[in-house]
Image (cartoon, rainbow, N blue to C red; front, side, top):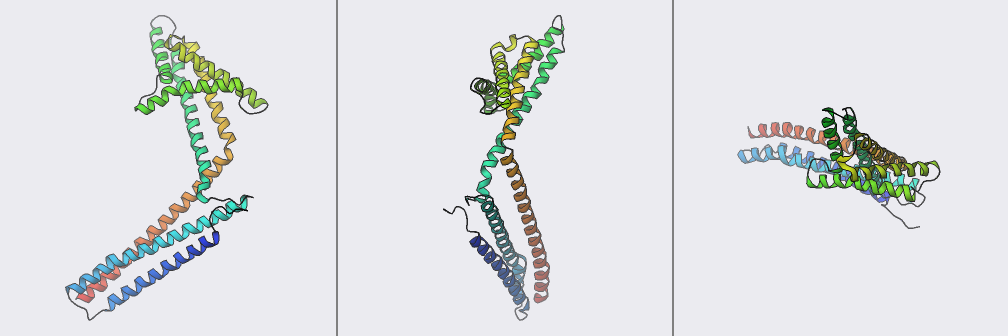
Length: 295
């Protein structure tokens, strides 16, 4: 069986060595600090400046390096734990650590994009419903036409923003129509009622997109509204199916990303607290010893 991934024993061994090195560096810093402070026979401005610099700079830097080594050691321990977990869950023994998050991350990003597009389509219906509230004849017909024109323009003509944003917005409806037509004609790849429903939503979405693209502002408000509802319904159906089909990968990605993020934040916070404590100790301890030595 081919081995893929890291050797957890080597990871933990390296993590232990980093931790030991951090401890030795802290001890060395403390010993040097004590030695500098004990140099009572070294007096004068140079001695005072050297002791001040060691207490406020060199000792702090040594402590920071020790903290970085400890952080790296904890990270390697986390990687070893992930490797064990991945190898235990996979019969092929192919754990990739953080690389295994990539498929779930892609699925999550696509889900967010699809949900956003579906929500945008549903939100866009408000313009069509607003057009329906105005009378079809008389003075109210002008407001009805303006509302309908704005609603169709938002779907077909693109949204405000940069050139790239407008381009993607303008090709969104044609792409929706093509995808919906493909699902209606060739099927969705599902079985049973999901395929039947998918073909139906695909037909509704394709017809709606085609009507809006061809008819434009010449459409009557009820027809344009029905077409927009069809497009929005297909978007919601597609997004829901994608999230359901990829629920395991999305859930695993979000769970592990939250766990990893919490661990990282905790590690950084711990390191920051340790560094702050060391700085205060070095500043107060080194400063007092230096002042006393130079007096």
